[in-house]
Length: 88
Image (cartoon, rainbow, N blue to C red):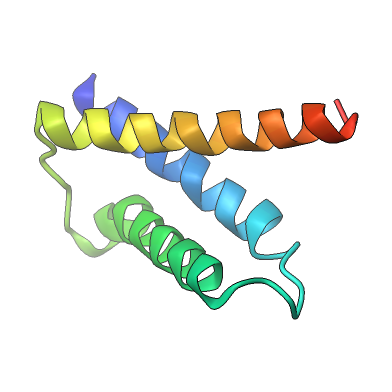
């Protein structure tokens, strides 16, 4: 169960990073934002594709909680931004 929560949160961050955040970046996006999303997406790729290369993670409760909280924040932030702009 803990591993499935860990994978689901990583997959959500990966999809949100690849298909939403990185694709919507323009030339005026701050470099810190670009680097942050690049690092988040790279870490999520490592977690999601790791089992294909024989590396199955053994997350602790703290790891899974941190990743799930980060995934929740990413979803909440996009929803809050969309509702502020009227794009619900």
